[in-house]
Length: 343
Image (tube, rainbow, N blue to C red; front, side, top):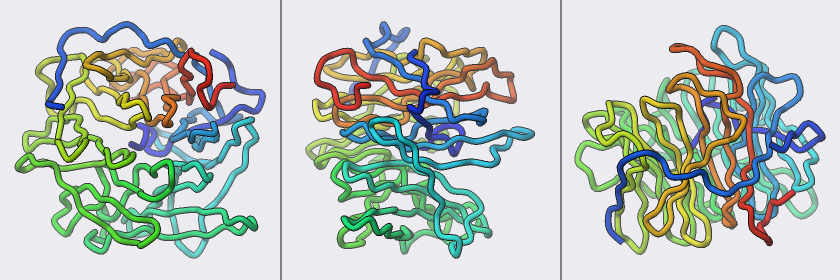
């Protein structure tokens, strides 16, 4: 799921990092914070940064942006090695992109992302590095997507083995501008559509691992719900929070670890918070340096690797009713031995 900076996915350990089987539901306040070591990621000279994804070796991708009149400008996209060495990249100039961002990185180090063209349509891309260092670019456009302003194809994540790319809330949008979920096989180039079994819902897929996938959907009344599909069975998940959510609010799932823990975040009338869900229990994911004054602020759990290392962004300045606080990225490392990505 793309972070709230619509383009934040973030940055790096370069000396600027400061340590720092059926439907399930839950009500009431969030559980106690999970035992993580939080590392802040901030791109030098940028007001907003965010981390989009991290692979099982600890390499990660993201973006840092300036801001003017509430708009993100002068964005830089980066790939960071497990040791924190940064490299920046740009997509092919002949694609006429007006903006672009990374959303995922697989265990090979290949990156998938999104870009918007001059007509306002969204497209996906896959950046692969061959064994000899040659960089190969592939456009990702679902043949059912409407190539119009507000339409198009929007990848949200790539599987750890690089075999499948999935789409989120704005995934592909058909000729009636109705969102659908999709799977894209990176070997065959085949697209497969998926819609949740809920009449009138709009579907978005945020993760895929070993046949399990999930994300979020919006009901016909505009309320958001989290879902996952495992062994062919559809499940919904209600994160701790308000039992009756207003339109446009609710949880979404963004990742799953190898042990089956689900990760996501909740939008509500309170500050945004991330969460982990396993064995019927929730724990919150909240950066200790978060400054949250409105429901636009807080901590998002945007992605996680198979070892359960979580990445995302958090607000480090107070927001207002119309303008969220500025963002730093973070890497949240479970405090246990042998976790890939530990610094």
